[in-house]
Amino acid sequence: MFRAAISIILVFLSISVNALSSFDKHYLSVTKGMSAFYMYLLSSEDKRFNQDFNRYFKEATSHISQSSDPVDKQFSQKWQELLPTLKYEQMVGMGASLNENIRGNFRKYAVDLFLEHKNRQKKSLNTVEALGRIQLNTFLLSARALDVDSTIYGTTMFTQHDFLLDQAEVFKQIQLDLEFLQTSKLSEAAFIQLRRIQAKLDFMKSSLIDYNTQSATYLLYQNALSITKIIKKLTSNNV
Image (cartoon, rainbow, N blue to C red; front, side, top):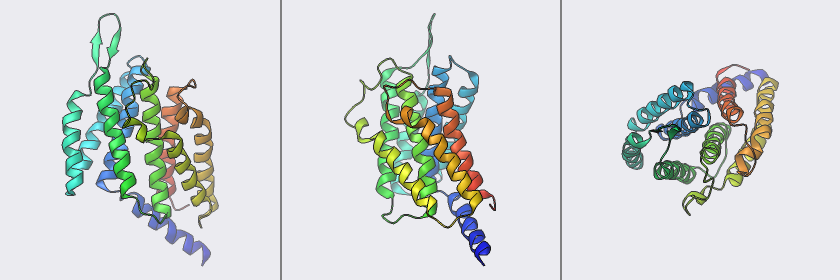
């Protein structure tokens, strides 16, 4: 009976998490794309990251265009206006360069997504929302950290709007969601996956919340991707 109950819970998780709203899928693809976009600059123009951010940007466009929600349509319009500007300039003898105004506009859009997602959250917490929010918040913080690491200006160009996203508070929410999951009725195999997520977050923590620390940017990006893959495995397999 107990094992059957576990299976039912995990099947429910698989169906629900894979059925994220169009807005949430857009949000996740944008922050994945943003991370890859800045990794391209940080990696001295590694073509793999160019391929990554172009793929994620296409996914972001596809997801938000599928929604009929009036607010989502507003975001779709903003995204269509922003997307063509997300290009690097090639400076002679210097390589790729990004206009700071474009960077600021991209950052503003990510903060707008964060605030809208926060506004849509329900007061009651469940396992589905916790898992979805962990991956959304992890990539949001990854994108933010890589944004800061890839510019000589750091956070000095942040606006009041940018500071509406408090990275320490977002990381705290990730931890609260993990703690909630660790008290849920899941299998031992599921708890192993949650401990893997926790270990990766422990490694990433200083880079995600303290922009004065030296970040291992490639590992930051790869760990964010890995956490998403773990969540997908957790919700797809009958563990």
